Image 1 (cartoon, rainbow, N blue to C red):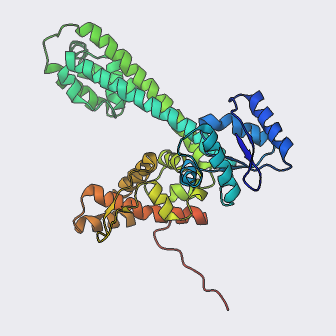
Image 2 (image 1 turned 60 degrees about the horizontal axis):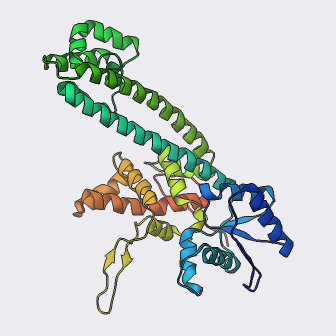
Image 3 (image 1 turned 135 degrees about the vertical axis):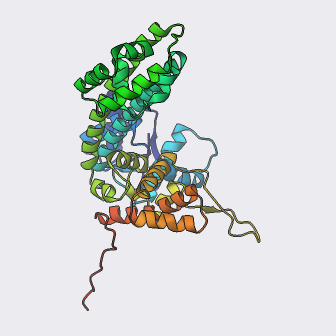
Amino acid sequence: MCLIDESGSVLLSMKVPNSESAILSMIAEAQGKASEVRWAVDIIGTSSALLLALLRQSDQHVRYASGRVAAAMSPAFPGEGKTDAKDSHVIAQTARLRADLPAIDAAADRVRELELLSSHRDDLVADRVRMINRMRDLLTSVAPSLEEAFDYSSSKGALTLLTGYSSPARIRKMGQARLGAWLRKRHVRSADDVAARAIEAASAQRIELPGADLAAAIISELASSILELDARLKQLEAQIAEVFRAHPRAASIESMPGFGPILGAMLLVAMGDQRSYPDAGHLAAAAGLAPVPNDSGRRVGNLHRPKRYSRPLRHAFYLSAQTAMMRPGPSRDYYLKKRDSGKTHTQAVIALARRRVDVLWALMRDNRTFTAEPPRTEPIAA
């Protein structure tokens, strides 16, 4: 923590443990040296949760000096080395010199909740992918025809089948009629089709490979775990949607074609406070969607993607653009226009994503929802 006065002189600089008692002592010591203290932090994630909660409890107003802003301010102060003391000094000087730093308010709390829920969802999705890959590897080792018969990453019916019948011999012994009835009892859609495909795959392999019984037991266990994980993911996504829609910018984001609650939550977490971006160009630059010049002497017009940008933010805009261009509307028309001009699919999607940044930023700025037609401006009476 670094405390400076209005002239920029350092009044206090200290290392503070991330504990309640230490932070409360720091707040009291800072308040003892000034009648009013302006607080600023450069992180609003997990590591600052306790600090922000205690500052809020103490009725202290906190500003957010993003890491990008602090990094840009750092060269203005002496010293090339990077230490916690220098970083805190730069943040304090930034808060002193800049009155436009956004406040950390209830919307930031929503983003914090979305960050926790989204990161937990990412972990569960990674676990699901790992289990599916392991299950398919085992299927390939004992029943390759059964492994090829279904897309286990998206077919709930195929996973349900494997919870009870994961070997060709058992599937053949069950028979198509009884297997279809067994699947229908477990509310599997197109149960007869799943049963027919399973019987066809089982009939293609008559030989029993070594370790088939043991592998079948593990496959059934993995299939059950994946179905349980799917249920947990469904509940978690409903919770994410509920928290996301409580954010003041949720309606504007979700109204944009291509954005739903999950992708909208990803955007809010990656973007942080919109007030950190003075205009749409700054937001596009942060997402790596605005090319930067690399001119020198007579060489001009040499543009390239910036090396420093937020990959999660770029990913959110890219996925939303790719989803939007699949349906009829302005996004698809613009994508097809770029393809007709000779752009590749990726180039066209990136161009569309850049265009959509302008639209989304304006929607959030004006707190309104997306419409296919531009809003009409009312004439101003003289």
